Length: 542
Image (cartoon, rainbow, N blue to C red; front, side):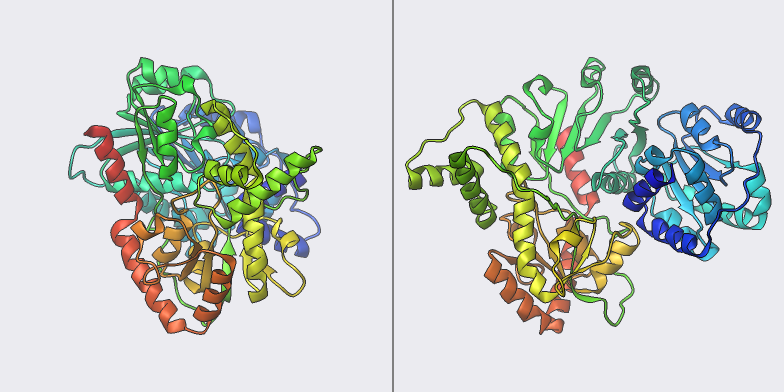
């Protein structure tokens, strides 16, 4: 049980996982377990949960599974934050119960072993809307650490006041955001979107789409708290036919190739699609989607802002997925293998060029005629190529970075990509607390876009300047619409260009600092989620 739980913890709460590992090194056994009457306790607590509560702070974990009872009995729009002072109690809990779905999901969040002085920072990393909240005290744990829990209740009350809409300057709309069960980047962007909508004065409810959700729960939410808009990130959501039936406009904001999800059967007058890369707009319109718009990513300046400067962190860093593939794609057909290898090389050298233009180059050079006429089959092939090219594209860039001994933060796959004496793997870091500090304090932050983004930039290209970090990014055409190149952000167009620019800027720290300051000004004035959501709402209501 513990091994599976800990694996999930390493993925979602890397700082907590490190803290727990340190505790385990010093303690050969957990504290004595004292059983509590779970049935009586949980029944008592279920009775006191108010039906309109959408946020619960659970103070303390015991030997019972009160957390599981709460999650099963609260509404799917209710977020639970678990606060436990002692890490040894959390260790015991990990050994007794299967928590991996809680740890990987977003309806339940954990703050474990936080010191009083650090508690506010730990709590503020989570941004979910609060309409009415309850504090539920686990009797045994609360009594054991009475002074601690009493001292943080004031901080909880202060926090709750910051998770509500600002006074609206224009018409206020009701948004229902649907949050999936797992994810890497989008769950953080979801919180940035909630914060942005609140700043604009709009009301937000979050429906947690857990594996246990039932159709009637979605239906009842729509009927009881009828939203003006339903918003999903990188998803089409459950029961889109119901949204249309209820005549509620629903929105998908995609940060990946939309053809991962969209088919002709999803076409609807009530469906609005926003894309982080404009190259897909015409593709979707071609198969019949009407309401398709370009809306790039952004930064949340309440999270990504300049952190305290230290004397030295590292010369170069990259933070993100390794996309490591232990085995390359191999085809039994040699001609097919040769064709795919040529195509992958062209993609790596020309990431902004449309796939079918690259294929046409191969057709002309080798006098062949590879083509797919049916649009949906065409896009399926594009998805396949993008999937296999992601790793190749990133790995080739990394190979040219290694000579500069960069630091890598992310998944364990980085261990397989760094070479002896070239590159340092630093593990996973907290997205909301540690990540901005790395952006501020790295001499050069590298941004590597994925191949499915042909024209635009990833959120990393906005978040780094928001922290007054200096960034060198692979070039995409829209970079010139967002920034003044070489004045606010630096881009490279090939491997030699990358090496040359790294070598130059490592020797010119004052120039780096000026570019970072210019980029900071540009992002905070033009490229925040408030700016993007204003545009979205303008499109939806015009």
